[in-house]
Amino acid sequence: MTTNPATTKTIEEAALRIRPLDREAMAEAAGRLDQLTKPPGSLGKLEELAIRLAGIAGEAAAKPPAKAIVVMAADHGVCEEGVSAFPQEVTGQMVLNFLNGGAAINVLARQTGAEVVCVDIGVRGELADDRLVVRKVRPGTANMAREAAMTREEAERAIGIGIDLAGELAAKGIGLLATGEMGIGNTTPSAAMLAVLSGADVEEAVGRGTGIDDEGLRRKRAAIRKAIKLHAPDAGDAIDVLAKVGGLELAGLAGLVLGAAAHRIPVVIDGFISTVAALAACRIAPLAKDYLIASHLSEERGHLRALEELGLEPMLRLGMRLGEGSGAALAFPLVDASCNVLREMATFGSAGVSVSQG
Ligand SMILES: Cc1cc2ncn([C@H]3O[C@H](COP(=O)(O)O)[C@@H](O)[C@H]3O)c2cc1C
Ligand SMILES: O=C(O)c1cccnc1
Image 1 (cartoon, protein in one colour):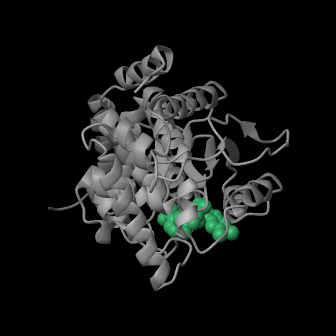
Image 2: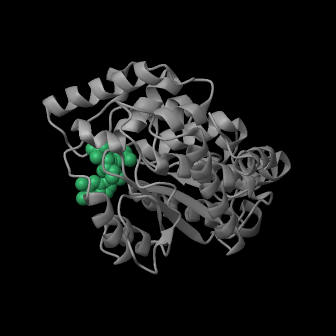
């Protein structure tokens, strides 16, 4: 398979730039949390998050960060196999909805003052709109049940786009990123990737996505089994898996995770599709895992398995199965809460509150 040395280098450099968390800053945050006017550990996951954010930022009490949700949009050739409850043109139609501010992600982002950055990384057809970030690698993937979804070079280019975008947003002052996606059919490549990367049964990895019926579910499983058999993706090579049975937005989001971690920026991961993209990123650069915050547990079958594969525990369980970054946006206030607890709560000493007797 051909590769482009420049893109291969972008990925390698980002992976090499990812550093372990700052243990000193984490110890300082943990020490401070124990001095605050509350029983030790009583703020549960907020405390764990505060400690990890300190390790990412390299300082114990950083301010709530400026936030952006990157919604990567792309089409999927595998839709020909009848794997989604919705027609493929909905991808482009929803991109316009995002740009006009009418989608669920726009509402949820507005509530937390987050920016939505919508990227065309592989939508079929031209979407002419100044507000759209156009970085199209190709107009949709090929049907993986018949041929590889894309070439390795294209997968690497899509990963590189995500890496570069994280860098551009970091340079603009964004301190917290979230993954979002739009791509009719994309739960199919996500399930295929999960099956290959985790060794899970196709049955365990595949869910109903937008709500396909039993017949559709059978077609979806059959398409995935056929694609895996046909291309035999190498489970030890996440880029091979992305190229053969993945998607352009999945590759772009894997790159976003790598780029964010390289810039010491935490990334809030949304649902099933986003988690599979993050899993691919962590197979490329395992240290990226410490920069991930799992927002919610999606209803989509396979999501729990994907989270377990990463060793992540979601903060919310709301029965959602939308994607777009919707669950991630809902977790933003929790990130702010953990920052503010560390910065604003009084200590036992400063407030004159008696400490524990044992
Ligand atoms: C109107 C609409 C808005 C969406 N927003 C996210 N998705 C979600 O559904 C799709 C994945 O499900 P499947 O693999 O079954 O097609 C993705 O686009 C995902 O982002 C949507 C789906 C629809 C129909
Ligand atoms: O969890 C998700 O991200 C998801 C689930 C179903 C459909 N679209 C997205």
